[in-house]
Image 1 (spheres, rainbow, N blue to C red):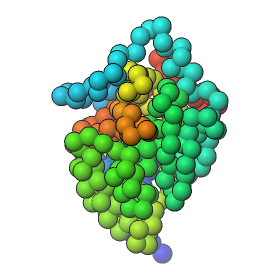
Image 2 (spheres, rainbow, N blue to C red; image 1 turned 90 degrees about the vertical axis):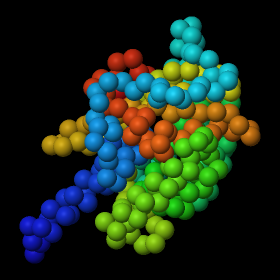
Image 3 (tube, helix red, strand yellow; image 1 turned 90 degrees about the horizontal axis):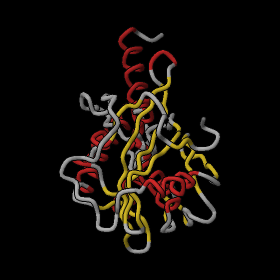
Length: 255
């Protein structure tokens, strides 16, 4: 029989696991990328996320023009979805990922759809929840920017806490995801760089569904898309709660 304190600890562990899957947005998302012990206000501000102060937009990542909005919205069409530890991740036979092995995914086209697919597939895989066999090579090979080392260090600390709470084996995933990539909106796009907001839905208290938008920056480098690490190595700094999908393009089947 569980004691009251044991039940409380079990509920706290479950809440922490759900938070990583329901406050990324994870992805980042970030209902996926909240810290194991999230900072106050990291994803609670109901205001739509804005580009973090001091960030420099990569050359060529021009502001999205109104006339291009239809083309960018079409990036969410014609996708297939594959399970990744409880989360459905998008893919395209034409735009990637063209390579998948050992839980990793890479090889995206230099197109709006390729950028969108890279943003989600790479950012989700940077979550500590999946274990070092996934987050370490993902960050090392597919994440760039001055805060990449901080993201890797934070993941190592978070994974140690999550593994202790879940009693996962060394190097094994510390849980499953409970979130869904729901919608997106490009803030900027060019063949050299892109910025896209990804909305992730996850379970909230009392059976409710919560939404969070995570801003993900990408640069085209070495023949593939790279995700720019979030400010301070914390996806919570790029995420904000949203109350509506108005203005976003909903992935087919998610509306």
